[in-house]
Length: 436
Image (cartoon, rainbow, N blue to C red; front, side, top):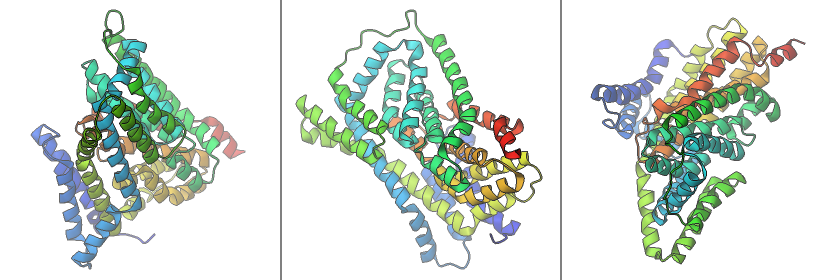
């Protein structure tokens, strides 16, 4: 990697500072995170990135922005957003989501709704290996559960996001797991075992918190009664969850959900024109989400072209002297790159080779390195307000992308476990084996 001067490096990452100052600072000063739209902050930061790019025509700069904004990965996410918006609107309008929520409320004690939602998110994400698919499946339910019980919608969305990233981090079929294990040359099952020592205690601690919250908020009998429901209307939603658990591509899962909802709705008297109208409104509702995704991807492409990612890698690895410091550096590397790319899989691939070299130099077990890469990228991805999962969940819920942030208990518990695992060299069996 070519050496980048401090002056050039700071200039290269300055669009991130412009974005943060224009969005976070303005929102804090105004006392309202709805005052400064993410799209406007991204436009300002992108404009600054275009201005500071040297020796390149405006046409070429726009090409760089457009190339990354229109990459296959981004376009794939846009398709998911469109289908998710259409299905969410259909399910809501024909009563599928409401019926599913009412059944859950009748079956579960009130104090177990939040813990149950978290466990469901953990299980689904672990099974299907994608946080996006889990968000699509459970966010509408979370919103209905919150509104039925007059609870905080951002809190319930945060519960879903936390559980979604539990599985994203651990699943054998997750993109992040595949990327982490391939770049470090270890087996998935070995990385899973090492990773479980970090993720499971964090999940159990957060589950205990949710149980305590539920017990504190429960009514006299612990149930909510008197809710009418049509069990047949649950079929489309159950199909979405079941096909997602089978590992079917999320776009096909959503398509199955849309078709099944239309068929069921027509049998209950809805006209095709009426249903298409619902779908159109749902697609329109994710328009802002799509714009934000395109602008963020384009801006981050300009930062990469300027050398911002390489400069971050250069600074982080400048001074390393021991194993613990090396592990913290690997954690910081993937977190910062994820902050810049808003894609945890891309972040892992970007720093994977460098992390492997650092691990070899300081005797860090590849399984631990893979675990750190996967876990820390998922932590960052879950906390940034412009991550695809947060944008999708909050768009479906109709809330600000930063609204769930105060309630993101699982990522912070996972952060604490990562720190403890590095400080106390956990799991210890890895250290014993690498010295033998």
